[in-house]
Length: 387
Image (cartoon, rainbow, N blue to C red; front, side, top):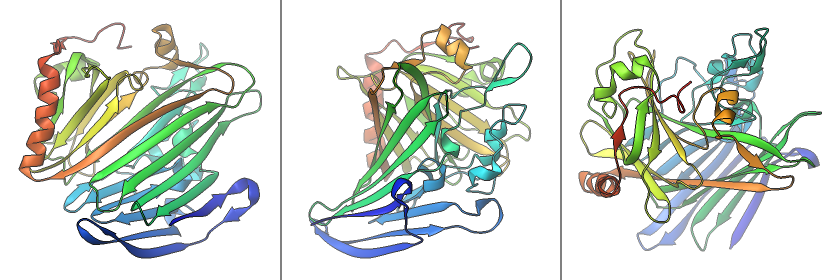
């Protein structure tokens, strides 16, 4: 039996203050419990943030309805996925000055495990010839609330779906509808994310989209590793060049250490499927992120390795472009066109892993992809990739 509950529907004035569903399903592994709760947070900069927390067997994750359905944190058994941001959030968008004159106001709300960047722009801030901000860092999307949210639970299949719709629109400007669906099977170690962008305007447009998937302590500490198969990669700037020899490992924190970014053309199989893997220092915990390169042709690895809380974090970032200014990306053909009424779809899947055997199998899949790829490492930034 399938049951759907509307949590938010702004158009029809529907809003659930709270929700708490607890039950179980019978699977091959036995009786598995699940729980879904909805609550509103209070106090400080989290005042007014709506959260849905899903517990499906060992898998747990928290979705921020007020922040474009971003995921605050997740865990699977003893595998914990989060980072200790100096921003003690989640932060309500009312407290995030997106259009601060320096263009970096987005950082005042940045604390999620999954943060979406887009849609009008998603890279570095860009200014006009008079020094006036045109496009803020990482765009508006993550600081817009979902206008419609639905929860679907199917007792027969043991699946839980949480869907949300977010509008990024303005008068005389762009009109985008962004849809998100989280799908999990109770008892599974996998989380599927399916998103789409629809152009609601009567004329063609274009957009950018990047996923900032951020993990720090306790999973990512000195000695942790990142695995990816690639055709080509390069450091983004001089800071990344200086640490190129350690691009795939995490080292001791250094106060004030600059961030580093590495840009990739990933390798994929004949269907376009690829995956990357993050593994802790023991080689026994981690996760893989799988997606199709036809949907996400570009990829960025972000690393900031300062003392924890100041921050020690890495970002694995599938995208339709690199995180440069919008004009630079457009000039290099990395801004996606979208016709009036057209919908573009994107999906990726996490597999949370505990145990060295599962980790080894995931890493082996990456290595097999690398065996058939060029694996070219540029010692310096590539001019067509790096601004």
